[in-house]
Image (cartoon, rainbow, N blue to C red; front, side, top):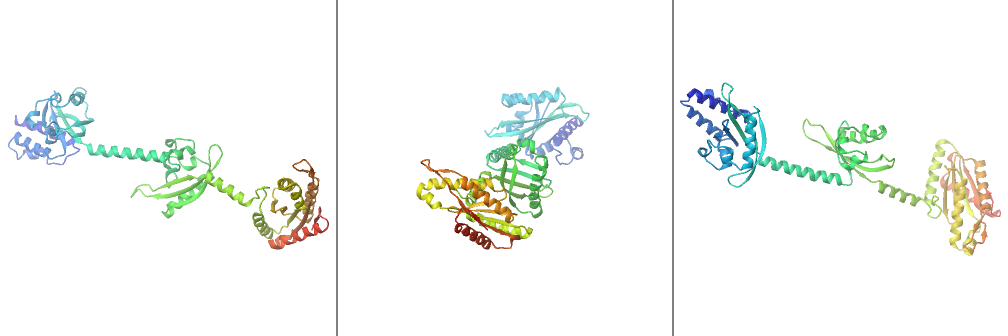
Length: 456
Protein backbone atom coordinates (compact mmCIF):
# COMPACT_ATOMS: atom_id res chain seq x y z
CA UNK A 1 0.00 0.00 0.00
CA UNK A 2 2.83 2.37 0.91
CA UNK A 3 4.60 1.54 -2.35
CA UNK A 4 1.42 2.34 -4.30
CA UNK A 5 1.06 5.71 -2.56
CA UNK A 6 4.70 6.54 -3.19
CA UNK A 7 4.29 5.63 -6.88
CA UNK A 8 1.29 7.96 -7.14
CA UNK A 9 3.20 10.78 -5.45
CA UNK A 10 6.20 10.09 -7.70
CA UNK A 11 3.98 10.35 -10.77
CA UNK A 12 2.41 13.56 -9.50
CA UNK A 13 5.75 15.10 -8.68
CA UNK A 14 7.29 14.06 -12.01
CA UNK A 15 4.36 15.53 -13.96
CA UNK A 16 4.40 18.74 -11.93
CA UNK A 17 8.14 19.03 -12.31
CA UNK A 18 7.76 18.63 -16.08
CA UNK A 19 4.91 21.13 -16.18
CA UNK A 20 7.04 23.64 -14.32
CA UNK A 21 9.78 23.28 -16.89
CA UNK A 22 12.29 21.21 -14.94
CA UNK A 23 11.70 22.49 -11.39
CA UNK A 24 14.99 21.85 -9.52
CA UNK A 25 14.61 19.66 -6.45
CA UNK A 26 16.01 16.53 -4.81
CA UNK A 27 14.35 13.49 -6.37
CA UNK A 28 11.48 11.81 -4.57
CA UNK A 29 13.26 8.46 -4.63
CA UNK A 30 16.21 9.91 -2.69
CA UNK A 31 13.81 11.48 -0.24
CA UNK A 32 11.86 8.24 0.25
CA UNK A 33 14.95 6.52 1.63
CA UNK A 34 14.78 8.74 4.74
CA UNK A 35 11.01 9.01 4.97
CA UNK A 36 8.85 6.78 7.17
CA UNK A 37 5.56 7.18 5.33
CA UNK A 38 3.82 8.29 2.16
CA UNK A 39 2.02 10.88 4.25
CA UNK A 40 5.32 12.50 5.25
CA UNK A 41 6.44 12.46 1.61
CA UNK A 42 3.20 14.06 0.44
CA UNK A 43 3.51 16.69 3.13
CA UNK A 44 7.02 17.54 2.05
CA UNK A 45 5.92 17.77 -1.59
CA UNK A 46 3.02 20.04 -0.64
CA UNK A 47 5.28 22.36 1.33
CA UNK A 48 7.66 22.67 -1.61
CA UNK A 49 4.92 23.30 -4.18
CA UNK A 50 3.26 25.85 -1.91
CA UNK A 51 6.36 28.02 -2.28
CA UNK A 52 6.21 28.33 -6.08
CA UNK A 53 4.38 31.25 -7.63
CA UNK A 54 2.42 28.98 -9.95
CA UNK A 55 -0.92 27.32 -9.25
CA UNK A 56 -0.51 23.53 -9.26
CA UNK A 57 -3.30 20.99 -8.94
CA UNK A 58 -4.16 17.38 -9.75
CA UNK A 59 -7.42 15.70 -10.71
CA UNK A 60 -8.60 12.17 -11.11
CA UNK A 61 -10.06 10.78 -14.32
CA UNK A 62 -13.51 12.08 -13.35
CA UNK A 63 -12.24 15.62 -13.04
CA UNK A 64 -12.37 15.70 -9.23
CA UNK A 65 -9.57 17.56 -7.50
CA UNK A 66 -7.14 15.33 -5.61
CA UNK A 67 -4.72 18.05 -4.55
CA UNK A 68 -3.99 21.80 -5.01
CA UNK A 69 -1.19 24.05 -3.80
CA UNK A 70 -1.61 27.36 -2.00
CA UNK A 71 -1.62 29.42 -5.24
CA UNK A 72 -4.37 27.23 -6.74
CA UNK A 73 -6.50 27.49 -3.60
CA UNK A 74 -6.26 31.28 -3.76
CA UNK A 75 -8.31 31.25 -6.95
CA UNK A 76 -11.37 29.81 -5.18
CA UNK A 77 -10.62 31.18 -1.71
CA UNK A 78 -11.26 27.69 -0.29
CA UNK A 79 -9.21 25.43 1.96
CA UNK A 80 -7.69 22.25 0.60
CA UNK A 81 -10.20 20.04 2.42
CA UNK A 82 -13.04 21.98 0.76
CA UNK A 83 -11.56 21.42 -2.68
CA UNK A 84 -10.62 17.73 -2.59
CA UNK A 85 -13.22 15.56 -4.31
CA UNK A 86 -15.02 18.43 -5.99
CA UNK A 87 -15.21 19.31 -9.69
CA UNK A 88 -14.70 22.61 -11.48
CA UNK A 89 -18.48 23.08 -11.73
CA UNK A 90 -18.68 23.09 -7.94
CA UNK A 91 -15.81 25.55 -7.47
CA UNK A 92 -15.63 27.88 -10.49
CA UNK A 93 -17.98 30.05 -12.57
CA UNK A 94 -19.89 27.99 -15.18
CA UNK A 95 -18.10 29.39 -18.25
CA UNK A 96 -14.65 28.76 -16.74
CA UNK A 97 -15.66 25.31 -15.47
CA UNK A 98 -16.89 24.42 -18.97
CA UNK A 99 -13.52 25.36 -20.49
CA UNK A 100 -11.64 23.23 -17.94
CA UNK A 101 -14.04 20.34 -18.59
CA UNK A 102 -13.26 20.48 -22.31
CA UNK A 103 -9.54 20.42 -21.54
CA UNK A 104 -9.96 17.40 -19.22
CA UNK A 105 -11.87 15.61 -21.96
CA UNK A 106 -9.00 16.17 -24.40
CA UNK A 107 -6.55 14.66 -21.95
CA UNK A 108 -8.65 11.64 -20.92
CA UNK A 109 -10.66 10.81 -24.05
CA UNK A 110 -8.34 12.00 -26.80
CA UNK A 111 -5.07 11.15 -25.02
CA UNK A 112 -3.68 14.64 -25.71
CA UNK A 113 -0.28 15.11 -24.11
CA UNK A 114 -0.47 18.86 -23.51
CA UNK A 115 -3.21 21.49 -23.61
CA UNK A 116 -2.42 25.18 -23.08
CA UNK A 117 -5.12 27.85 -22.71
CA UNK A 118 -5.42 31.36 -21.30
CA UNK A 119 -8.14 32.18 -18.78
CA UNK A 120 -9.41 35.43 -17.35
CA UNK A 121 -10.30 34.76 -13.72
CA UNK A 122 -11.97 36.80 -11.03
CA UNK A 123 -10.11 35.86 -7.86
CA UNK A 124 -11.77 35.28 -4.51
CA UNK A 125 -10.58 38.73 -3.42
CA UNK A 126 -12.32 40.32 -6.43
CA UNK A 127 -9.20 41.05 -8.49
CA UNK A 128 -9.07 40.20 -12.18
CA UNK A 129 -6.15 38.00 -13.20
CA UNK A 130 -5.02 36.24 -16.37
CA UNK A 131 -3.63 32.72 -16.12
CA UNK A 132 -1.86 30.51 -18.62
CA UNK A 133 -3.14 26.99 -17.88
CA UNK A 134 -1.13 23.96 -18.97
CA UNK A 135 -2.74 20.56 -18.44
CA UNK A 136 -0.93 17.23 -18.90
CA UNK A 137 -1.72 13.58 -18.28
CA UNK A 138 -0.84 12.20 -14.82
CA UNK A 139 0.50 8.64 -15.03
CA UNK A 140 1.71 6.12 -12.49
CA UNK A 141 5.04 4.32 -12.56
CA UNK A 142 3.73 1.80 -15.08
CA UNK A 143 2.54 4.53 -17.45
CA UNK A 144 -1.12 4.05 -16.68
CA UNK A 145 -3.22 7.24 -16.92
CA UNK A 146 -4.52 8.01 -13.44
CA UNK A 147 -5.58 11.64 -13.80
CA UNK A 148 -4.42 15.08 -14.81
CA UNK A 149 -1.94 17.59 -13.49
CA UNK A 150 -2.31 21.27 -14.23
CA UNK A 151 -0.33 24.43 -13.72
CA UNK A 152 -1.64 27.95 -13.95
CA UNK A 153 0.92 30.74 -14.20
CA UNK A 154 -0.28 34.24 -13.41
CA UNK A 155 0.54 36.18 -16.59
CA UNK A 156 -1.51 39.26 -15.71
CA UNK A 157 1.52 41.57 -15.64
CA UNK A 158 2.92 40.02 -18.80
CA UNK A 159 -0.39 40.43 -20.62
CA UNK A 160 -0.65 44.01 -19.41
CA UNK A 161 2.85 44.71 -20.71
CA UNK A 162 2.09 42.96 -24.01
CA UNK A 163 -1.06 45.02 -24.41
CA UNK A 164 0.81 48.20 -23.60
CA UNK A 165 3.51 47.22 -26.09
CA UNK A 166 0.83 46.47 -28.70
CA UNK A 167 -0.79 49.85 -28.11
CA UNK A 168 2.56 51.62 -28.32
CA UNK A 169 3.40 49.82 -31.56
CA UNK A 170 -0.02 50.68 -32.96
CA UNK A 171 0.46 54.31 -31.94
CA UNK A 172 3.97 54.43 -33.37
CA UNK A 173 2.92 52.76 -36.64
CA UNK A 174 -0.06 55.10 -36.94
CA UNK A 175 2.23 58.10 -36.50
CA UNK A 176 4.93 56.77 -38.83
CA UNK A 177 2.40 55.81 -41.51
CA UNK A 178 0.81 59.26 -41.53
CA UNK A 179 3.85 61.48 -41.05
CA UNK A 180 4.78 63.38 -44.20
CA UNK A 181 8.18 61.73 -44.53
CA UNK A 182 9.67 58.52 -45.90
CA UNK A 183 10.98 56.51 -42.93
CA UNK A 184 12.83 53.23 -43.28
CA UNK A 185 15.44 50.98 -41.68
CA UNK A 186 18.16 49.13 -43.60
CA UNK A 187 21.15 46.96 -42.79
CA UNK A 188 24.68 47.17 -44.16
CA UNK A 189 23.62 45.02 -47.12
CA UNK A 190 21.07 47.72 -48.00
CA UNK A 191 18.21 45.37 -47.19
CA UNK A 192 14.99 46.91 -45.87
CA UNK A 193 13.87 45.85 -42.38
CA UNK A 194 11.14 48.49 -42.06
CA UNK A 195 9.36 51.01 -44.27
CA UNK A 196 6.39 53.18 -43.44
CA UNK A 197 3.45 53.41 -45.82
CA UNK A 198 4.60 56.75 -47.22
CA UNK A 199 7.94 55.24 -48.19
CA UNK A 200 6.36 52.09 -49.65
CA UNK A 201 3.96 54.20 -51.74
CA UNK A 202 6.96 55.77 -53.47
CA UNK A 203 7.54 52.36 -55.08
CA UNK A 204 3.84 51.73 -55.62
CA UNK A 205 3.90 48.85 -53.13
CA UNK A 206 2.75 47.89 -49.63
CA UNK A 207 5.32 47.78 -46.80
CA UNK A 208 5.27 43.96 -46.58
CA UNK A 209 6.22 43.77 -50.26
CA UNK A 210 9.41 45.74 -49.58
CA UNK A 211 10.66 44.21 -46.32
CA UNK A 212 13.65 41.97 -47.05
CA UNK A 213 14.39 43.52 -50.44
CA UNK A 214 17.48 45.55 -51.40
CA UNK A 215 17.57 48.97 -53.05
CA UNK A 216 18.82 47.39 -56.27
CA UNK A 217 15.64 45.27 -56.48
CA UNK A 218 13.41 48.35 -56.34
CA UNK A 219 15.17 50.99 -58.43
CA UNK A 220 17.63 51.42 -61.26
CA UNK A 221 21.31 50.67 -60.62
CA UNK A 222 22.47 54.30 -60.81
CA UNK A 223 19.92 55.53 -58.27
CA UNK A 224 20.59 52.55 -55.98
CA UNK A 225 24.34 53.20 -56.02
CA UNK A 226 23.84 56.89 -55.23
CA UNK A 227 21.61 56.05 -52.28
CA UNK A 228 23.85 53.26 -51.05
CA UNK A 229 26.93 55.51 -51.03
CA UNK A 230 25.39 57.53 -48.20
CA UNK A 231 24.52 54.28 -46.38
CA UNK A 232 28.15 53.23 -46.52
CA UNK A 233 29.24 56.53 -45.00
CA UNK A 234 26.89 55.98 -42.06
CA UNK A 235 28.29 52.50 -41.36
CA UNK A 236 31.88 53.60 -41.99
CA UNK A 237 31.83 56.64 -39.70
CA UNK A 238 29.17 55.56 -37.22
CA UNK A 239 27.78 59.09 -37.52
CA UNK A 240 24.65 60.66 -38.99
CA UNK A 241 24.84 61.71 -42.64
CA UNK A 242 22.58 64.02 -44.62
CA UNK A 243 22.26 64.96 -48.28
CA UNK A 244 19.84 66.05 -50.98
CA UNK A 245 18.83 63.31 -53.38
CA UNK A 246 16.53 62.71 -56.31
CA UNK A 247 14.25 59.82 -57.21
CA UNK A 248 12.17 59.22 -60.32
CA UNK A 249 8.86 57.68 -59.27
CA UNK A 250 6.57 55.41 -61.26
CA UNK A 251 4.89 58.23 -63.20
CA UNK A 252 8.29 59.49 -64.38
CA UNK A 253 8.32 62.61 -62.24
CA UNK A 254 11.57 63.55 -60.53
CA UNK A 255 11.16 63.96 -56.78
CA UNK A 256 13.66 65.79 -54.59
CA UNK A 257 14.40 64.69 -51.03
CA UNK A 258 16.38 65.90 -48.04
CA UNK A 259 17.64 62.73 -46.40
CA UNK A 260 19.03 62.18 -42.92
CA UNK A 261 20.47 58.76 -42.06
CA UNK A 262 21.54 57.83 -38.54
CA UNK A 263 23.21 54.65 -37.22
CA UNK A 264 21.04 52.38 -35.10
CA UNK A 265 23.01 50.14 -32.73
CA UNK A 266 20.86 47.18 -31.69
CA UNK A 267 23.46 45.85 -29.28
CA UNK A 268 26.08 43.12 -29.22
CA UNK A 269 25.76 40.33 -31.81
CA UNK A 270 22.82 42.03 -33.53
CA UNK A 271 22.87 43.33 -37.09
CA UNK A 272 23.88 47.01 -37.31
CA UNK A 273 21.17 49.14 -38.90
CA UNK A 274 20.55 52.66 -40.05
CA UNK A 275 17.36 54.64 -39.85
CA UNK A 276 16.61 56.93 -42.75
CA UNK A 277 14.22 59.86 -42.84
CA UNK A 278 13.70 61.34 -46.29
CA UNK A 279 11.53 64.44 -46.56
CA UNK A 280 10.01 65.26 -49.94
CA UNK A 281 11.18 68.78 -50.78
CA UNK A 282 10.05 68.70 -54.42
CA UNK A 283 7.71 71.67 -54.06
CA UNK A 284 10.34 73.61 -52.13
CA UNK A 285 12.98 72.72 -54.74
CA UNK A 286 10.72 73.77 -57.60
CA UNK A 287 9.80 77.01 -55.83
CA UNK A 288 13.48 77.67 -55.18
CA UNK A 289 14.27 76.96 -58.82
CA UNK A 290 11.54 79.35 -59.94
CA UNK A 291 12.90 82.02 -57.62
CA UNK A 292 16.40 81.37 -58.93
CA UNK A 293 15.23 81.71 -62.52
CA UNK A 294 13.29 84.86 -61.66
CA UNK A 295 16.37 86.34 -60.02
CA UNK A 296 18.31 85.72 -63.25
CA UNK A 297 15.58 86.64 -65.72
CA UNK A 298 14.23 89.90 -67.05
CA UNK A 299 10.54 89.78 -66.09
CA UNK A 300 9.31 91.54 -69.24
CA UNK A 301 11.17 89.67 -72.00
CA UNK A 302 12.16 86.44 -70.15
CA UNK A 303 15.72 86.93 -71.38
CA UNK A 304 18.60 86.86 -68.90
CA UNK A 305 19.00 89.98 -66.78
CA UNK A 306 22.16 92.06 -66.63
CA UNK A 307 23.60 90.35 -63.56
CA UNK A 308 23.25 86.85 -64.98
CA UNK A 309 24.46 87.96 -68.41
CA UNK A 310 27.65 89.34 -66.88
CA UNK A 311 28.20 86.12 -64.90
CA UNK A 312 27.70 84.02 -68.03
CA UNK A 313 30.19 86.18 -69.88
CA UNK A 314 32.85 85.55 -67.24
CA UNK A 315 32.25 81.79 -67.38
CA UNK A 316 32.32 81.68 -71.18
CA UNK A 317 35.57 83.64 -71.38
CA UNK A 318 37.16 81.23 -68.85
CA UNK A 319 36.05 78.28 -70.93
CA UNK A 320 37.33 79.94 -74.11
CA UNK A 321 40.76 80.33 -72.50
CA UNK A 322 40.84 76.62 -71.65
CA UNK A 323 39.65 75.52 -75.10
CA UNK A 324 41.39 78.29 -77.12
CA UNK A 325 38.14 79.12 -78.94
CA UNK A 326 36.69 82.49 -79.97
CA UNK A 327 33.70 84.21 -78.37
CA UNK A 328 31.52 86.87 -80.00
CA UNK A 329 29.45 89.57 -78.32
CA UNK A 330 26.65 91.63 -79.86
CA UNK A 331 25.41 94.75 -78.07
CA UNK A 332 22.06 95.92 -79.45
CA UNK A 333 20.33 99.25 -78.89
CA UNK A 334 16.90 100.13 -80.32
CA UNK A 335 17.05 103.36 -82.31
CA UNK A 336 15.05 106.35 -81.00
CA UNK A 337 13.15 104.12 -78.60
CA UNK A 338 12.45 107.02 -76.22
CA UNK A 339 10.25 108.60 -78.89
CA UNK A 340 8.18 105.38 -79.06
CA UNK A 341 7.45 105.60 -75.34
CA UNK A 342 6.79 109.33 -75.53
CA UNK A 343 4.44 109.10 -78.51
CA UNK A 344 2.65 105.79 -78.02
CA UNK A 345 3.09 105.12 -74.30
CA UNK A 346 5.03 102.60 -72.28
CA UNK A 347 2.55 99.78 -72.91
CA UNK A 348 3.31 99.90 -76.63
CA UNK A 349 7.00 100.29 -75.82
CA UNK A 350 6.88 97.12 -73.73
CA UNK A 351 5.20 95.27 -76.60
CA UNK A 352 8.05 96.33 -78.90
CA UNK A 353 10.67 95.12 -76.40
CA UNK A 354 8.95 91.73 -76.12
CA UNK A 355 8.79 91.31 -79.88
CA UNK A 356 12.46 92.25 -80.31
CA UNK A 357 13.36 89.68 -77.61
CA UNK A 358 11.41 87.07 -79.59
CA UNK A 359 13.33 87.97 -82.75
CA UNK A 360 16.66 87.61 -80.91
CA UNK A 361 15.61 84.27 -79.48
CA UNK A 362 14.45 83.00 -82.89
CA UNK A 363 17.54 84.13 -84.85
CA UNK A 364 20.26 82.96 -82.44
CA UNK A 365 21.48 79.47 -81.59
CA UNK A 366 20.35 77.43 -78.59
CA UNK A 367 23.83 77.70 -77.07
CA UNK A 368 23.89 81.50 -77.47
CA UNK A 369 23.13 83.58 -74.38
CA UNK A 370 20.72 86.49 -74.85
CA UNK A 371 19.91 89.10 -72.26
CA UNK A 372 18.18 92.40 -71.72
CA UNK A 373 20.85 94.63 -70.25
CA UNK A 374 18.60 97.52 -69.35
CA UNK A 375 15.98 99.75 -71.02
CA UNK A 376 16.12 99.15 -74.76
CA UNK A 377 19.60 97.58 -74.72
CA UNK A 378 20.14 93.86 -75.42
CA UNK A 379 23.17 91.60 -75.57
CA UNK A 380 23.95 88.29 -77.29
CA UNK A 381 26.94 86.22 -76.19
CA UNK A 382 27.95 83.59 -78.76
CA UNK A 383 30.48 80.95 -77.61
CA UNK A 384 32.73 79.50 -80.31
CA UNK A 385 31.70 82.12 -82.93
CA UNK A 386 34.26 83.97 -85.05
CA UNK A 387 34.03 87.45 -86.59
CA UNK A 388 32.39 86.39 -89.87
CA UNK A 389 29.61 84.41 -88.16
CA UNK A 390 29.04 87.18 -85.63
CA UNK A 391 28.66 89.78 -88.41
CA UNK A 392 26.26 87.47 -90.27
CA UNK A 393 24.06 87.11 -87.19
CA UNK A 394 24.16 90.85 -86.54
CA UNK A 395 22.98 91.58 -90.05
CA UNK A 396 20.12 89.06 -89.84
CA UNK A 397 18.99 90.66 -86.60
CA UNK A 398 19.17 94.17 -88.05
CA UNK A 399 17.12 93.22 -91.11
CA UNK A 400 14.52 91.32 -89.10
CA UNK A 401 14.09 94.27 -86.72
CA UNK A 402 13.72 96.74 -89.56
CA UNK A 403 11.10 94.59 -91.26
CA UNK A 404 9.11 93.82 -88.09
CA UNK A 405 5.82 95.65 -87.87
CA UNK A 406 4.50 97.01 -84.58
CA UNK A 407 1.09 98.51 -83.96
CA UNK A 408 0.06 101.26 -81.54
CA UNK A 409 -3.02 100.97 -79.35
CA UNK A 410 -4.89 103.03 -81.94
CA UNK A 411 -3.81 100.66 -84.73
CA UNK A 412 -1.13 102.96 -86.16
CA UNK A 413 1.80 100.96 -87.61
CA UNK A 414 5.34 101.73 -86.50
CA UNK A 415 8.82 100.38 -87.10
CA UNK A 416 11.82 100.23 -84.78
CA UNK A 417 15.35 99.66 -86.06
CA UNK A 418 18.43 98.64 -84.13
CA UNK A 419 22.11 99.58 -83.95
CA UNK A 420 24.55 96.74 -83.18
CA UNK A 421 28.10 96.69 -81.89
CA UNK A 422 30.10 93.52 -82.63
CA UNK A 423 33.18 92.35 -80.68
CA UNK A 424 35.13 89.10 -80.93
CA UNK A 425 37.49 87.80 -78.27
CA UNK A 426 40.08 85.30 -79.47
CA UNK A 427 40.81 82.45 -77.05
CA UNK A 428 39.38 84.36 -74.11
CA UNK A 429 42.29 86.78 -74.02
CA UNK A 430 40.22 89.65 -72.57
CA UNK A 431 38.55 90.39 -69.29
CA UNK A 432 34.78 90.75 -69.21
CA UNK A 433 35.12 94.51 -68.81
CA UNK A 434 37.47 94.79 -71.81
CA UNK A 435 35.22 92.60 -73.93
CA UNK A 436 32.10 94.58 -73.08
CA UNK A 437 33.87 97.92 -73.66
CA UNK A 438 35.00 96.83 -77.12
CA UNK A 439 31.44 95.92 -78.14
CA UNK A 440 30.12 99.13 -76.56
CA UNK A 441 32.52 101.26 -78.61
CA UNK A 442 31.40 99.48 -81.79
CA UNK A 443 27.77 100.17 -80.82
CA UNK A 444 28.39 103.91 -80.52
CA UNK A 445 30.16 103.84 -83.88
CA UNK A 446 27.01 102.30 -85.38
CA UNK A 447 24.91 105.08 -83.84
CA UNK A 448 27.30 107.74 -85.11
CA UNK A 449 27.08 106.17 -88.55
CA UNK A 450 23.36 106.91 -88.69
CA UNK A 451 21.88 103.92 -86.78
CA UNK A 452 20.13 100.87 -88.31
CA UNK A 453 23.52 99.28 -88.92
CA UNK A 454 26.29 97.32 -87.19
CA UNK A 455 29.94 98.06 -86.57
CA UNK A 456 32.79 95.90 -85.34
